[in-house]
Image (cartoon, rainbow, N blue to C red):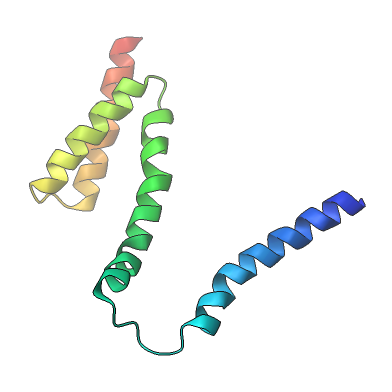
Length: 102
């Protein structure tokens, strides 16, 4: 292992662990600020959305098929469809649009 690789691995391990350890060391009691609490409540959802939405558009051959599936999936979920139905609808939309595109 080269020294550059060892330094990179060490810095990666340090930053990954600091992100987890610092909040435990700095925040001792209950968080009472409503803004901070609501911010922390939504962080997992935002992180999931940031990782998922680009993949929805870029995983298909044509980004318009991904966009159409995304919009129809949002509309179906808004109307109360369950997760399996929404996912099935989105897959069918992508399949049909890419089949039509050739």
